[in-house]
Length: 376
Image (cartoon, rainbow, N blue to C red; front, side, top):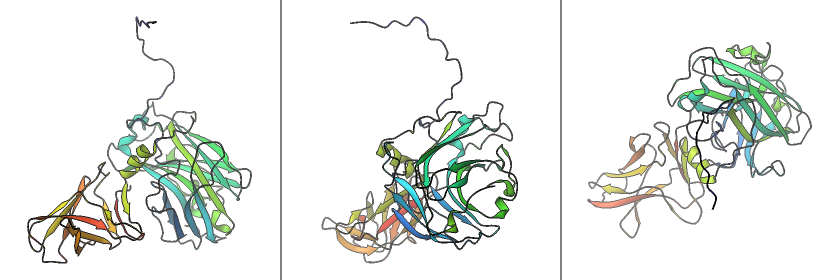
């Protein structure tokens, strides 16, 4: 048996970048579009519909008052032979061929400042960032990707071109490190945003594209951007989104499904019902009196912040071994709530049987859900 003897360990030299503190080189979460807790399709997205609708961690944003509308969906149309199972699709369903000056349509993801300290923003050693992704659209032309930094109100935009219609193309964009301003806030609030522009009015296109870091000037943010909303034939697909420190794009970092899901759970935890079985949703509760029952739910992992709780009015309290229904909950009956867990207090269906255990479940319908959202 051979042996390896090490006489000396020397420090590493040359250019290299330390990985971020969660052990993943990709700052983007769910860049392969594989997690979609909220559902796989959302229709009629347009004016007033900013929010998270399908794939986790990616937000649809609409500003101004565009009349264009989209269907957003998790698609199985993917670049061949690259290992991806899903993409995100934006399908224009109502056209707006002439965007208003203040109109903006974006697909974007936000990041906590405490996860970005290794980028050394605002110092002479600020790291460059390289964005890579696969994209496909029938609408060829110029599109804009932007990094927007909230703590110092700075941004940088770069363009990419879709050259061939209906063809998957890989794009790579490098953004120089920002040596100006202060460091990013070291907390759980939003510090940076990666934006894919899909449409922009003249308030965002009438200047000169700011392809170096600078204070925000709206007119310079999306110069040259095509209008994906100008025809109902337009579609835009994206997958394999990776944002990493350095000036070179590495191969996409595929994570195990459970790891990817756990990263998404920090920002949204959702339990969906089904048509056949009631879904237990709690870790147990206790009936303290004939009028009050408290049921606890613990988040694993803890959420980013105190969540917003929403549900479908399909929550039931069940008691004793026979799982008999004793009351209904709604989202106005949330008691103590923080990033670690939540307590639901039931007061309907009384009288309860004092000093007995209880649990909570979703009714057996596909429309049933309970969601805890701590998005940025």
